[in-house]
Length: 191
Length: 177
Image (cartoon, rainbow over the protein chains, first blue to last red):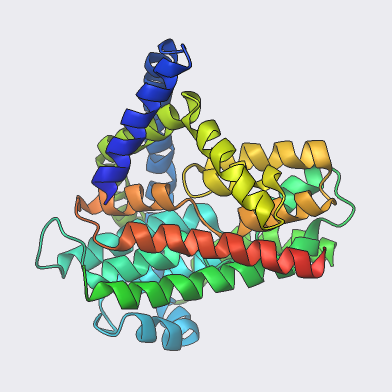
């Protein structure tokens, strides 16, 4: 699926640029985007290093048990096959709490760590497991309670009521999360 | 209300950090050693992402800069107008799952031209806040573990985006319309 999407994007882009008579855009876009991708990875080094360090403290100190207490019903319902004391569960719980609280840059390192732990339980080395797909579905629909970036943007653009979109955002994010979880369950059997 | 949310948003990470450190002190954890032990894993994990990010972000960059994205938006516009949805929102709806920075730029532009408190501005804000950049999340999360076959993860992510967009249009029409 990703294969086809990737190929289609490249082929269509080259054809469209050619028809528009702006074929030079392709070379420029390759350089710009590749450079941007590496900058993103460099940025990831810094935030991953920091947050994975903090996560270790959360685990070792036992603070993780309190997080578990709060999100237990949801996490155990979504990931019934992951043992409750498995390291993967710890990372999943931290990722979910960071997402909900709008701590985007902390959520990603926890999420990547969770993927790595789930992959250790995966018997097929380059095929995604059921749990990994469920986890991805959760993260792409992102259960936000506080859309911090959007509020900040609205403040900076002079909105008279920057937070009036919190309610509508929670509604839309709730719908997309429910749809994601249901579709994941439904499509799992076929994939 | 605004003040409270602004406060909560800016205090979230500092307070979380404080709780972690103080809890660790109380439990007599060797904090710095423990931090370094965990932090060590950050570098290799992030470096592993480079090939996946370059591959995906180049394809997305091509699609945006070649004019293909615009073409797709123009093609779909009449369909949206038919359902009474403002066509100006379409570029954002198409960009949201593909590029986070692109979606942010479009939202900013919409709010600058129509105003943040217009219907379009509120709808754009709701859309931006309610889903994540599916392709980026997919690339980074599966890239980190070297999984190539993502099974149903991509269709689920994209369909969830679509349902989020429809839900945003529905609720905004109801509340602000």
